[in-house]
Length: 56
Figure (cartoon, rainbow, N blue to C red):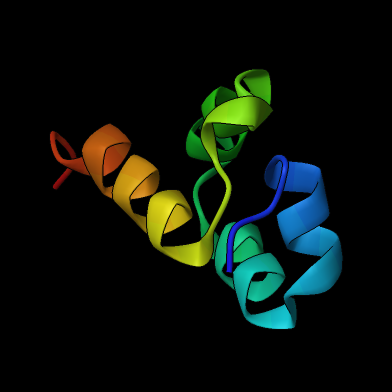
């Protein structure tokens, strides 16, 4: 299911909220800065993966 933005997604999907909370601070900050770019759990995971690809 698609949502209008990150906040709507996190409010509606406990799984998305739990995933978001487990992300590093800098990743959450970057995703939060562009909330309209995230409209599903899949897009949230893709975005987070892209941001963390250089880690580790």
